Length: 289
Ligand SMILES: C[S@@+](CC[C@H](N)C(=O)[O-])C[C@H]1O[C@@H](n2cnc3c(N)ncnc32)[C@H](O)[C@@H]1O
Image: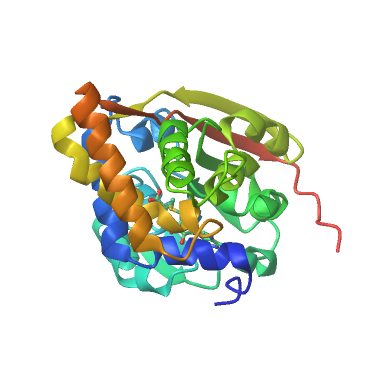
C-alpha cells in the first residue's frame, strides 16, 4: 500500500477498511436523503460515453460510481479501480462484472496515476474522494486523451456541519475539547469542495460544467440508531485529534442525541449538498518534477 504511509491516509484507511460498514452507511445516506434523484444518474445523464474504452475510477471503494456506467460506455471498455483499501477488490470486481465492464483493481493508492502514460484514458470518474487527494488533479488531466472527460462529485464545505457542530458540542460538554477545536473532517472536505473545486480544476481543464445537487439527510426521533451508526462509521474523521477513548465518546454522543430527541421531538437534519463537475479539454501539461 504505497500511499498509506502518512497520518491522513491512516485516518482514511481506518474509516474505509470496514467494507460492509461502508455499504451499510451508503444505505443509511440513501434512505435518509430528501433528494430522491440518484446523484450518479444526475452526473452521467446527457453525457455520451459510448466511445469510452479506457476508464479509471479513483477512490473506487466498492464500486458505487462504476455501477452507474452500466450500458453507458463502449462494449470493450476496461475500467481500473484505484483505492487504498485492498478489501474492496472482490466487491469492486463483482460490480464491474454486473455493469458488464472488464474490471481491474489496485490498492496502491492514487499515486499510481503518476506512473500512467500521458493521454491513456477516455474517462476518469471519482465520487466523493477528490478532497483526499486534490494534488492528483494535474495528473488526471495529463492521463486523459484530448476528448477525455473527468466526472467528479464533491461536497459543499458546509456539508455535515450540523453533525460536526453537534459532535463538537458533545466534546466540549464532555470536557475533552474546547470551543476552538477543528475536526479532521473539516480540513478534508475543504481541501476540494464545491466552492474551491472550479478554481482548482480550471488550471487543468478548459471546459468545466458545474451542477448543484442539493440534499439533506433527515433523521426522525425513531432513527436515532441509524444516526449513531453513521457517526460511528466516520469516527476517525471526527475523533482522532480529540481523544483515544472512542467508546466513551460514543456513549456521550448517544446520551446527548437522546436528550436532543426527547427535548425537542424534532428531526435531526444534516446538510448534504454536493456538486458534480464534468471537465473536458484537459490541458495535458506535464507535471513539473
Ligand atoms: C467517501 S469514499 C467514496 C467511495 C466511492 N467513490 C463511492 O462513491 O462510494 C472515499 C474512498 O476514497 C478512498 N481513498 C482515500 N484516499 C485514497 C488514496 N490516496 N488513493 C486511493 N483511494 C483513496 C477511500 O478508501 C474510500 O474508498
